[in-house]
Image (cartoon, rainbow, N blue to C red; front, side):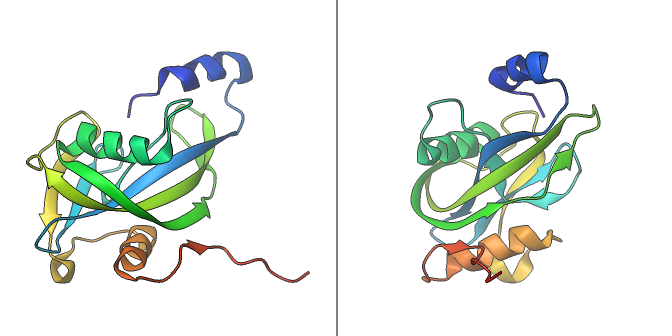
Length: 159
């Protein structure tokens, strides 16, 4: 995965220490109710489409941009389905990041699903009863996107 220029600039100053960053993810549905997935180039696993907003970029704009950049599918974000701070990730080069994921339910409005950059090995539409193996968090986000419940977030626990 390419490192965004603004993160590369930060790394020149802060080194490999933890960066706390925004992230966006998209559960994109087509008119047939299928979900758009990409098989990631970094780990070979199927997942929903995700990425990092550029400085000053609105999250909804970022999620639509990431979907089109990675899959050539144009989409419209409809609502936020989940907000969650993820566990820190240490990349092979030693950089450490922790993301706050804003997950959007999106509706496809054009384009043909295909690998559109170097971040995916495969891209495709999947019926909900024929999903490839996915990590639990991708499944959770798909489930939340199907539900009309309010946005999910980690509840406050009493101390």
